[in-house]
Image (tube, rainbow, N blue to C red; front, side, top):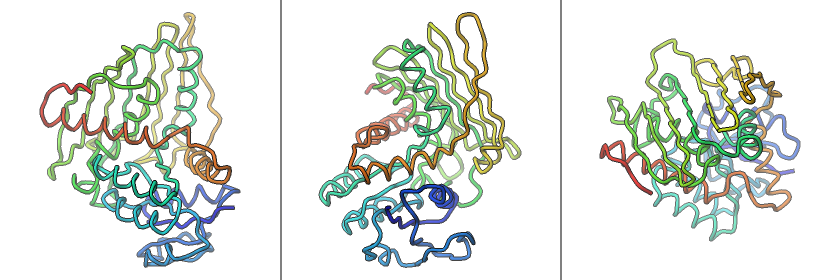
Length: 328
């Protein structure tokens, strides 16, 4: 049993806390937050307002960082210096230099770092990955979209220096997954729009991969009021195609009650695929904790992949700013 210290109790912090409730190999024993009113009534652990209290607690094995992106490096390095293993929400950070400092810190202190790229644990995406290794080995074209309104629960999302905008907060999901699916990238070309603060809030990226496949990925935090948060993914091969769409609420708060459609096209036939309901965050956190308990390598989202995805985001940012194709 691993004891977790959870840092931050915004939308994603509450999502992690709820996921931990259903896991048997760990428990949240302390939460660091500035506002104890936000703590759900079912939680019976302690709470602190001083981060140092978590770090000095010898009973805590894992620090789970669910803070705004611009705070990740400071809190992660302090946790690693305290000898704690770390789970950190995506994006890890906004620059490669910052990422390298963080990786150096966990390596020096001999602690483990897990970065929460949740799409790799999402039921539909897990199935697409399986199909790409079986029925659809010859993937040619991938199309991914993730469209919603600007997050309303905190203003830091609008600041490019704090969040990286939709590019780093939203686009990262599908960019990471197409890399997971198709491998290293050859060229990138992107266009988009910025919000009034200078953050990229709508991004459309064309990627060409070393294996000759292509992908078009779109993300937006610019959709109008009332637009349902929607994400879909289509993967086309010579042997068949998978296509799925999820239409949720303003965000993913009611994801299990949202509209799901997953279709498979092959042999001149169209069939609907039923997906067993799973909680992706439970899948993710259970896997991370199990890696620690069994001392096994993190093969789903290794740190090299985290760094490569960040490299892709920086290349997209370069293409957006220069209006030119970027070759990796």
